[in-house]
Image: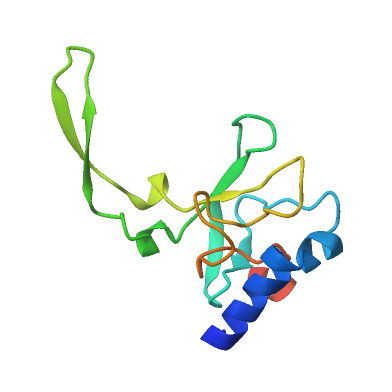
Length: 131
């Protein structure tokens, strides 16, 4: 487990100094079915590969969506008749991180966060996690 001091050190390396972005292979991407480490040391399996959003905003989903503060909370959508429908956030709807094709600097960052979220993934493949 990474302690808070190390977590903030990792944040500084990625966000402020851009160290990881300079050291990550230019063709790096998170792969569906593989495990990676979060900044707080928890392993995460990618359950959905690169999401085809707008170029440069591609994302992946991890299996740790249950750690998201919104998991299990309700939200409202509307059906084709305009009637409200109550839904519950599931892990599969959460856990999005950037897996961008246009820049290495945001790889693993939870969407909507800076590099200060302990749920961000470290954009490095560790073989021992996948044995």
